[in-house]
Image (cartoon, rainbow, N blue to C red):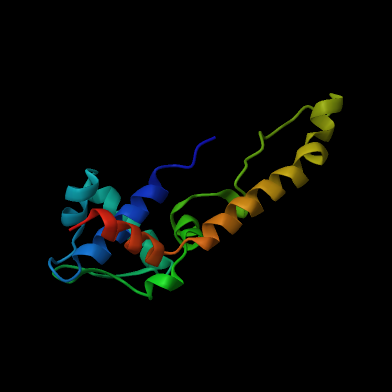
Length: 143
C-alpha cells in the first residue's frame, strides 16, 4: 500500500505558496513550474485544499493564498483534504471474502481492530506536523 502523491504534491504546493507569496502571483501555472506536473492537476489539488479551508483561490488574476495561520494547518488536515479514502478508512478490504472459508468468514474480526490502531497512530503523527514546521525546514534550504 502506498499513499498517493497527492499528499506530497499538496505540501509542495503549500510550501510554494508560502515561500513565494510576496514575490509572485501564485497561479496554477506557476505552481506547475515548481512541481513539474500539469496545471490541471495543480488546480484539482488547489480545489481540494480550498474546499477544506486551507487555501483561498481567486480565479483569473487573483492567485492562491494560504487561508489560515501555518501553525493551524497540520499534515492531517492536508492528508484529509487530498487523499481519497473511503469512509475515512485508510485500509480497503477486498469486497467479498468467501463466507464458506474459515479465514474469509472471520478476516474482519481478525484484522479490523489492528488496522484501526495503525490508522489512528498514523493520523496522530500527521497531527503533530504543521505547515509552520515545514516553513522552518524550508528556510534551511531555500534562499
